[in-house]
Image (cartoon, rainbow, N blue to C red; front, side, top):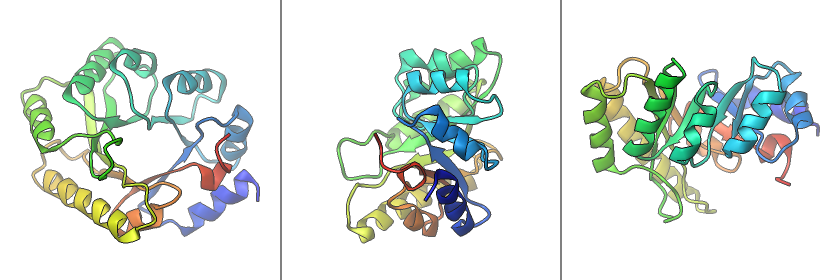
Length: 220
């Protein structure tokens, strides 16, 4: 199966409200272009250096998503062009994105990353940190970010019941925040699910999935 065929097959199975982010990390530009030539435009990278290199050398109508853990000292490199930052896992990082957004004269769209997995290795906010962000946002301290929704990663396990439980838990938090209209009407994205578990994530209410190996093949 070619990259184009893999992509088309996945898109065919997705509900209309679900956005696919094709995760092109470690893949060459040629692989991205093969997907691009089908008319697809949304790609995700998890390393700033690779994201910047691809942005420079590939067509400018691509929407680039930063899906990996983002260090505060790297924000300035992607601030001028990134379409969505998935992994806001601290108020400190969000403040830096806001600062760089101001320098780039734009509002940078972001998702708040929640810690839902039982693995200690996953990054993410807890309830206290969410409250800090809400307070800062409502005080008008973050004018150069758009908080578009939430992101979470489930435990890497064969236990689908556990994965479903973790995704369901994030959906509950997402719904509470959305109903309170905490971040305004732009708060609509729930990014959950990757190649191995996106069907479960969609069942739990995800409307954005991040798929790499199922499109591009295994990582190099």
